[in-house]
Image (cartoon, rainbow, N blue to C red; front, side):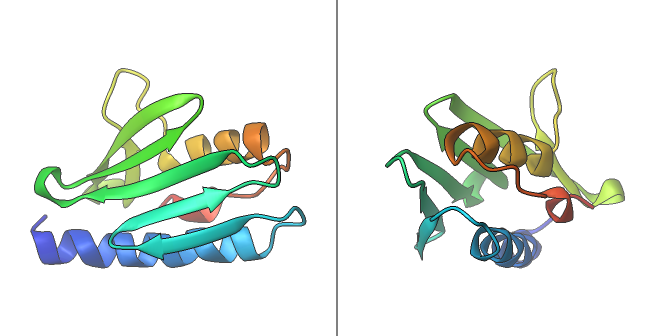
Length: 111
């Protein structure tokens, strides 16, 4: 994947994340600036989704820790770059459930 394809993939992904956050029943505020999306939950906890263009990675940071994701073209999915290899949608759903205290369907973020 080249850098233009990387940004196109993440542009699409960020739009999907925004749609999920807009549909939430809880108050989830988000601001996107310079490749960084900061999501603030009602409790004040922040979740950060960031582009790492030099590495062609997507990073997710929360009080639970930081996670790196790489793109898998054949499955059209971002997945962790470690032995767990969980998808971004699955992890994002878990993080939001934990910190926003709402079960959100993040399956559209995968594939």
